Image (cartoon, rainbow, N blue to C red; front, side, top):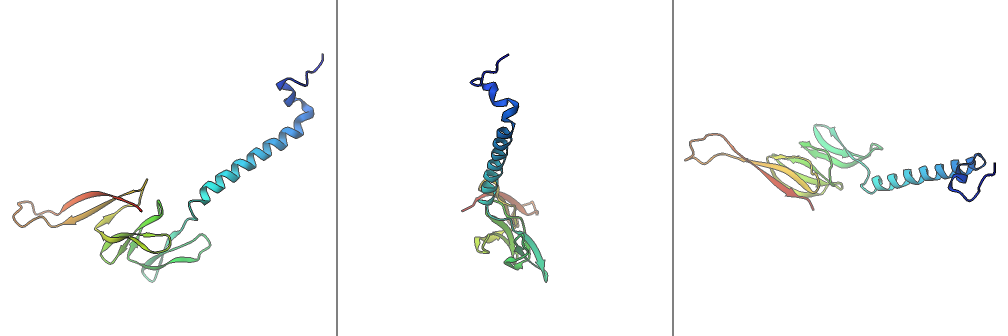
Length: 142
């Protein structure tokens, strides 16, 4: 029986095993590289840390990248994190700059460029309902 070297099955002949292993390894390396480039373009993750009762952020190597200055803080999503500065929530970027000034009573992390926030106020005096009002507002990131 003769073996046709021009057929697609010839690629899988045992004498081409080394070539297939090299090609598979290169394909795997390329896939891992692409995934690494995509995930690194989002920036290295930074994590909240509490020092002397104030919250700041550190990078994976343990270096403080945003000095502890907040009463409370959330996780970074879409480049911003909710932070409680004084008595109101705002949003800080990865450099520690307040991108959205503290003005909310409640603030959730961003998702797809939006965040859910709430402002609570006392109901008007002429209202028979003595409970606070609460409104949820979508906030767009920068």
